[in-house]
Amino acid sequence: MTRKMSLTQPEDISEEAIAPNVETENVLSVRGVTVGFGDKIILQDLDLDVRRGEVLGFVGGSGTGKSVLMRTILGLTPKRNGTIKVFGHDLSTANAQERKSIERRWGVLFQQGALFSSLTVKQNIQVPMREYLKLSPELMDELATLKLELVGLPQDAADKLPSELSGGMVKRASLARALALDPDLVFLDEPTSGLDPIGAAAFDSLIENLSSTLGLTVYMVTHDLDSLHSICNRIAVLGKKRVLAIGTMDDMMKNDDPWIKEYFRGERALRRA
Image 1: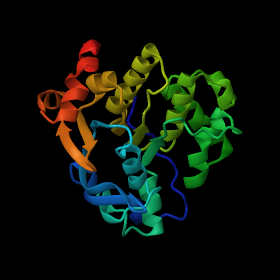
Image 2: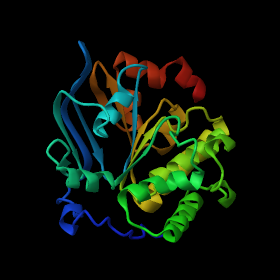
Image 3: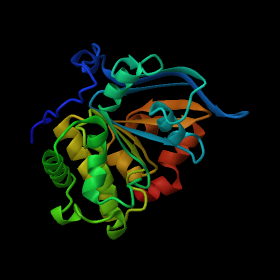
Image 4: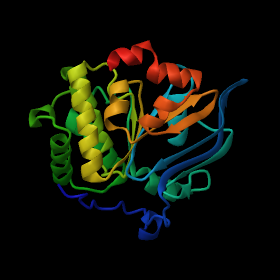
């Protein structure tokens, strides 16, 4: 499979706006980010880097702010302080045109899929195409068919509603939508939650294959130890409102922080082994 097919650019974005800055090794850089709701601070002075081409697993206790950070990066939750750079661009200073070109280069799979219930799978996949591109209906149908094939869904799934799909098929359809614009960076929020062990393993393999074949950078919020062991190049651990540690699985296994030690070497983790 080749890297990406070139899609027609939207007319309102110039070539100069789409051309990325000279990029460093890091696709995503978070520095000093603080996020709070009212008097409650969720994240404080948090730093994080995500390297190009890696699968980064992002873990932490329930309620520590894993999804909050992802939503903050995506611009869905406001931050109080700090900077977030994606593809070398500071999202705080990007104008509307620049922001649109940056968003075109990422895809998102939310925890429950977040498919539009009244749209077919094919129509859901085409939503980003309609928002960012100017394509003929025939070309959008062809691209949607390619995305279905890419995530391993049968072609007859195209005209089904989300309610007619199994949980695993919903995840794959949501991933197909996340890949609709051939992104460089994909955000996955608990992609294997709700799946049985066989389905979760198959989804992990899919993510790993897509990452290596398409050169994707993957930011994955997960609690799944199997996913962390099998497909993640590095793991970042969130706790105490910041990133406590980041490194390989071997690094995590040697870390003596009490929460990290219990998570990766506790009784439940040892039963997995």
